[in-house]
Image (cartoon, rainbow, N blue to C red):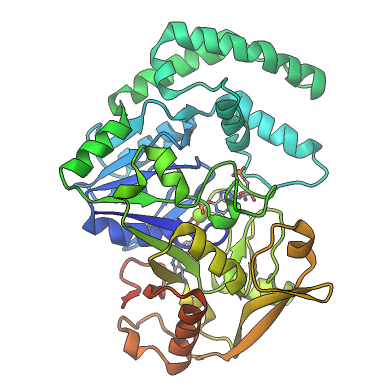
Length: 423
Ligand code: GDP
Ligand code: IMO
Ligand code: MG
């Protein structure tokens, strides 16, 4: 049996918390796309962990974690994450963590290119500056360097020389930046390869063998549906397929082996970085929810933009991810509100939009049509049974379920592991 946890909005839905809970029931947890642009928070007892590349299940010592081929790996960031977790007492052995040989590598020039490109753009994306876009561009442009290449000095040398040949021209002539020195990068990345060697394998073979042996697998999505390169609010997106489609190409596990898809939503919406956000609050409400929900980026610390739940986007997300169950996270953040709104359609230039539109003008200027629901004005954080939730909270949840047409199985009412209602 395998299941996917996918972000149904713009990321930061609380996937890390949900995966930490669900990973108890599985044998292997797999990241399938994205890179260290992700920040997944898990709180256990009084300890907080923020994972960027390593699957959120690593805290469970008997579970295996895989970083699959669809992920782009910054070796320096990964080694820092491994070392940080070792310092916190985790074994981080080569049997517990597996890294795909054919995942692509984030190089120093990717990080810099990300920042230089952002600097030149009139319409900024607000990237995390981690080199994600340039690394995926090189992958698709067939000039990328893969993890396995770090183990073969001859291959790495040839690829890096070729890359720098072109890139140094671009850096110097287009951006007025410096030339990269071949030998410095070469030596550093050979060292990274040697340090990562115990973890490297063909993760597609590993996962398919595990499936044959009836192991349970959980696929951990990073980012969210509207940051997906194909289905998101392009170009204000990340450079990978964050949606469930990304699981197959990102891991080598075929669609016939995936059974459940849990789409994770926040009880409201947030987005970090630039781009359209139809239900975004005005200044005051934005500040109110940001402070109640501690809505600051786990990777960059930037304040997250906040807004009402958007069922127009929600329905699209459920459809393209093939959600079989939903999780509504951070319900407690709405605990004190008088009234809660849900967008059910948009209006733009006299036309009603019931469905998501890829037209940036519609997304940027449409006026959402809202339903208003009464708030419950009481704390839900101690509640563990659905029927004990205040009536108004149940009405809100059931209305979301009706609009999205998929059962809501998980309701999260706090950041800690046990603060969850399972229906
Ligand atoms: P992810 O990227 O989807 O894993 O989400 P992040 O970890 O970036 O952001 C979610 C934030 O909300 C983290 O700080 C979590 O600790 C926190 N969180 C998760 N679930 C809940 C919840 O139900 N209630 C509250 N108040 N916080 C939560
Ligand atoms: P998790 O996995 C929220 C956003 C960035 C920017 C856009 C492109 O924690 O949900 P990139 O660096 O990927 O080229 O930036 O995507 N972004 C995220 N927003 N959560 C994330 O990950 C994100 N990863 C990237 O803010 O708007
Ligand atoms: Mg996050």
